[in-house]
Picture (cartoon, rainbow, N blue to C red):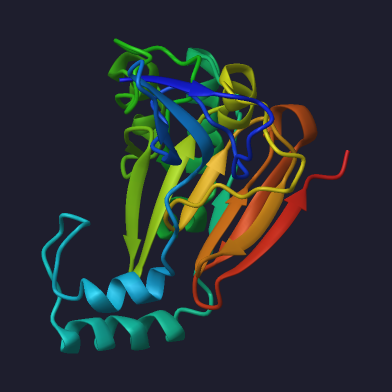
Length: 246
């Protein structure tokens, strides 16, 4: 069906790019064209409301949990006051530097034994394709680091992690830049927030943290450009926007 959108007609806030799912209201004209009067994104539902309605369904893939198991994990999560995620985005390491990073981590016994290191490929990293989801970094780049840090995890981009009751999405992509470049309809000047799940979106934009529909979202910023990173405490869902002092 051919569609026609006029700029003077009202649109919702956000970036309308190719393959975006939208809700459109308008009139089907005799010449077969659907004249769009208003369009916007589908309404969002609060995550807690969705979770209560979909209780028992397994969207994560690790198996559905009983109420007792969920309550037990919730109690353990509250006690994990010392657990923390430290997230750095836009970190540039070639093959030699991967080995040096492994040596540095391996020289600190407590860090090596009590921490887990997760590596996600970026948009310009080596791999068979740039199509999302991106495969994990190839073994020939990572084997030197794994000699020093055997429990390092090299996973896809995006990837999902379950920490007790929390489901966290890590996604490394210059999404804001790509959406601005590919926007079909000029965006509203109103401030917008793109809601996903409980998400960490790493791109080259400045650091940002916010809550939306019960979801904690944050961007750690560019470590390569600004030495910025984020410390996330899952026990309290606190986000600390941080940076190294030069």
